[in-house]
Amino acid sequence: MSFSVNSPILFIVAGIAVAAVLAQSIFFLRKAWKRGLAIGMDRARLRRTARTAAIFTIAPAAAIVISVITLSKDLGVPLPWLRLSVVGNLSYETIAATNAESAMGLTFGQVSGLSARQYVTIASVMTVSIMVGIWLVPVIGEKLQNGMINLENRDKKWGEIFTSSMFIGMISAFIGYVFCDFGTVFRGESSGLIPVCVMAVAALIMTGLGLASKKPGLRILADYALPVSLVAGMAAAIPITAWLG
Image (cartoon, rainbow, N blue to C red; front, side):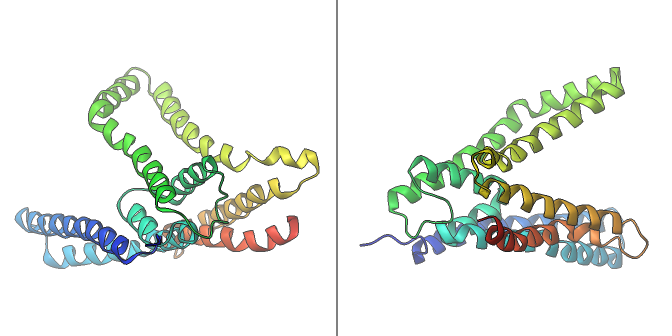
């Protein structure tokens, strides 16, 4: 029996996991609603809050759908659907899948069919790696947070510098991935410029939307800046790739 990344059994397994996550969301939503009523919150205010939250989930949901489509060419629909519905994001999932495929001599985006062994290997890399963060939170999360609070209490300026440095370090890891092939430019190959140009387009659009959202009546743009810049960057990749090869 041949293996398929879109096998019905994979959809069933992924669907069960996603259904469990949705059940948890509904459970805690009901608990929050009852708690709101218990502390005297007005029903109309609760409905307005729930409606606003539902509308604002459209923006990140659009980014998730795009991420699933991006990964589905190589990995099929069930695995990206499961990964991005539970814990994960396009940047991490793409890097993990690309590294796993590279180790097996494959090129991300150019895989026509995976064997069961290759599929399990890629799924393991994508899943086990990101779970390290989940394991570390209960182990060192409280100590790390208390340490940061103590640092801010002793010296607020250095506390802000430390927090900003951690954030910049995280972003630098992804930026390094964008520039990892830039050296090919010095060998006369322009393909290394493609991810850099795509990032520049997305960054410019994100900046423009961020500035526009500061104007009265346009604040909603801030909630849709991520998916819009993501879609625009992907769309820009087509002509940029055709231009730079």
